[in-house]
Image (cartoon, rainbow, N blue to C red):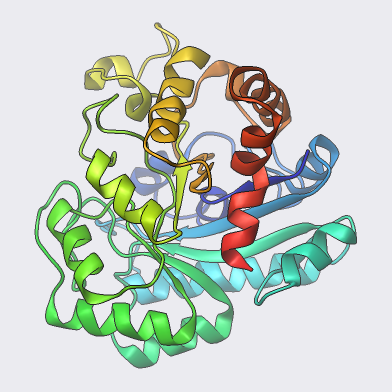
Length: 328
């Protein structure tokens, strides 16, 4: 089975391992190793062994609060991007960066992980010139906000629509062929994006708000709007986006989230016409995931269970085909 995952935070966990302790705590536990070999959810060699081909969107996640890092959002991006580029060069037998149409298939056919560089939180996009430079770096998708507001728009925890500059950024992303990712965006911000561009959109790691009432999840109308445009919605493995729970429960694995609970989001989206829209958006190395889906080795068995539940064709679409078609 081939895998195409729209979102992970593995890049941050490795590139920022030496920043101050208060910030590092947000990035998980053991962060030794590199992009090819590590003990995190995703490691290039383990991904290759677990699948018949793996395409991975590696996000530069820029937190809203960089206190203690001595980094501006743009400097934060630059540091992660340089690490990503260095890893591509250090492991040419493991990774190939996918910059344009055909690169994913070429990488997978050669037995490599197809690595797509993305950004989570457009805070580093301080000008259209900065955006152009990111396109030159090979950035293929940008999540416009994280949970707070930035110069682009309001986030899920800090409502607000697109700013005037945000509208310019969305239009320029369309010209550059960079996918607009609306995960983390406020409801008003998503509505504004739909009004500003007719391009297909991505919600790289968002579930159904009808199933789990969380502002990070999509309403039915939002999902339909993305689906009608030929966009993508990546199913998120984060437990707190699968089942409603308090903060204490979300921080504890005491009550496991089940396969039935996660597949309920998929079933609901399929009922809304999402057969060609659904994909994977794991949020690996950036969130607490179910024990039965705790790393790349367990993704194939998850896809097998989806095939048993929804049929082999739907499982293939979710696992790989829909995302691969979109980026082609």
